[in-house]
Amino acid sequence: MSQLLALAKRYDLVVGDKFEMFYRGIIRSLNPYKYVIHIDCEKGKAYPRYYTLTPTSADVGDYELTVSLYNDYHELIESSKTNLHIVEAAKPNRIVNILCFGDSLTVNGVWPSVGYQRFCEKGGAPEGLGFGECLRMVGEKYNGKVGYTGFGGWKWSEFCTNDFIGISSSVWVKCQHHFDEHDQESLWESNGKKWYLETIEKDQLKFKRGPGNIGCSPNIGKTFTHLEGGIHISDITVESYQYEETNPFWSEKLQGPSFKEYCDRKGFPDLDYVYILLTWNGQYKPFCSDFSHHEKYIRMILDAIKRDYPLCKVGLIGIQSPSVNGGITANYGCRGFYSDTLGDVYTAYNYDMFLEKLTECDEYKTWVRYIDMKAQFDVEHSMPSVDTPVNARSALTEKLGTNGVHPTMEGYLQIGDAFFRALVSDMKDESGE
Image (cartoon, rainbow, N blue to C red; front, top):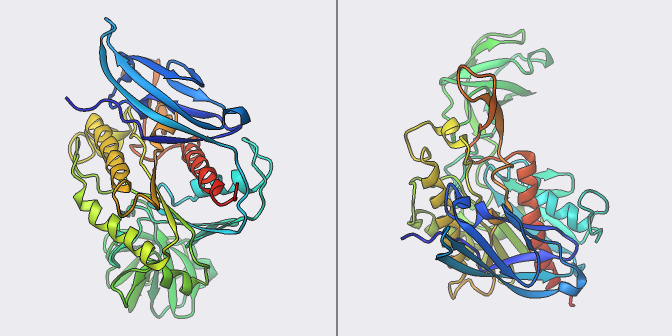
C-alpha cells in the first residue's frame, strides 16, 4: 500500500506569524476527509481542514507534531511525525546576497518579493518585520528592489544547457525595415505563431508573444507576415533572430552552469543563499516515483553552486498539489501526461519526497535543505476557478477549476509566505544570536 501521509521532516514557524498546515497538502488522496484526521501536538489547534499555530516568544523551540489517520471504527490506518521549528526573527549582522530562480511559478516574482517585503519592509498585511535593506536579492528580472529569475516552461535541465527558451520570452529580429511608432502593437505571424511588434530600433525589431504562442523555443520562419494593426504591412525578411530568455547561468567555457561567471557578468556580489522552486514541468507520468530525469541536472546545479561559492547555502522549495476541482482537465483534457488528477497528486508528493531525500545525502545535507511548500498551500481555495452551471439544464452553479498548476494571486502569496518562514529561519543563523 502506498504511503498516505507526506509530512516533511521539518516546518519553519515564525513568532507572530500565522502558520497553517492544510491536510490536502500532507495527505495523498483526492478526498483526505474520508479519514478521521487526528493531530497531536503540545501547541496549536486542529480544525477540520488544517492545523494552525501563531507562535509567541514563549513558544520558541522545537515541537513534535503527529498526524494519525483512522477509519470510522477508530482503527489506525497510518501515522507520521514532523518537527515544528519555531524561531524569533532577527536581523542578519551583514548584507546577505540571495538568488531566487524557477519556472512559471516564479515568472511574476511574487514569492521572492513576499519574502523580501515581509522581512525587510514595514507595514503591509501581515505586518513586515522592517529590518531594512539587509537582503540583496539578485536576478534577471526585478520587482522593485527584488531581483529574481523565472522562465515559463523550464525544468532543471534548461538551467544546465543553452538550448531552451522560456514560454514568455520575446524575440529580437535583425532585419531591414521602415517601421515607426504607428506600427507598435501590430500583429504578425511567423511559422504559424503570432507575434506583437513591441520595440522598434534601427536595424532590429522586438516581438512579444501573441495569442496562443506559449511554446518553448518556437522556431522563427524566414518572414513575418502582417495580420492586423499598424501602417506598414509588407512582409519582414528575417536576417537573424535571438530570444531574450536564454540560460543566464550558461558558461561557454565550462559548457555548463556557472554562477560565478553569471554574477561577475552582471556585476552581482558573491552569493550567500540560493532558493530554487522547480518544477511542475517534466512530471511526465502519473503516480511517478522515478525522477532520475531530473536528478542529474539537480546535482549539476547544486555542484556548480558549491564549486563557485563553497559557503553558499541552498533551499529547494517543493511543488504544491495540482488543482483538485477540474483545473487539470481544463488544461490537459482526458488523455496525456497531466490528465490524471489523482496520478498528478501522487507525482507531486513523490517528487517532493524525492527532493527531501536528495537534500539528506552526505554531499548535500550540511548546506542544502528542503522547504515543504505544499502543506502551506490551500489548494482548495488558491487555484483559479469559475462559477459554472451544475448541468446544462440548471441555473445553479458550482466552482470548477480553470488551471491545473498555476494558482491565484492568493496562492502565489501563500508560496511567498512559505519562503518567508524559511528565510527567517535561515537568517537567524546570520544574526549571531
